[in-house]
Length: 252
Image 1 (cartoon, one colour):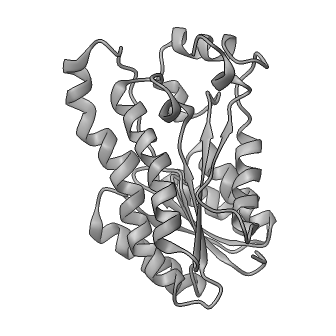
Image 2 (tube, rainbow, N blue to C red):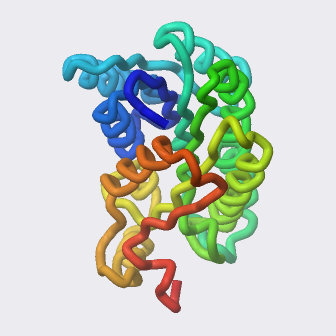
């Protein structure tokens, strides 16, 4: 898909990774709605930065657990920017909970599922209706995690939510074909994000030590690959791992 003049809505756009994705999309000629759940000031700052650089960008409230706010975000994006072609589901929530601590994990279970799994589905349901108004269809990119590929990650609930998102990607690729292509990126540990700040120092260090490249995954690589998934005309239903080789480590 030719990206110049297209419009994207990025959930979690006020975050470190989300902001990078917004910038990379704008550099490809895409107009961007920077979605936020609670970081209004950060979202507005990202949008202002992009606008000051000559791009078209707006800030939109988008709590993925709220049906009415999701609908409003989609409608505002299409109304203010003229259309909606791309959805990037980057909004997520985690909390570091030992796997054996099922009681504490269960207290967080519903919130993690609501944001990480039901939230993207809610976004897709609303956004796909608008995307199908265009003869060019649309592109959806889900930001998942390598935690969804094995029994690892910050908690049982987080791992299960991301495994669900990986499989949701495949199911949606089938459900929305041929008009809308759906793909997924599964990052490993990322430095300098709100998600990584919620991990214990031990977990962060282990994530680096257990990667083949001995370093955190690149946020810039993830942002660039997001754009490539928006460009593609023949790739759908795929999950790409970007984790500095940690998934290949036998002790993950």
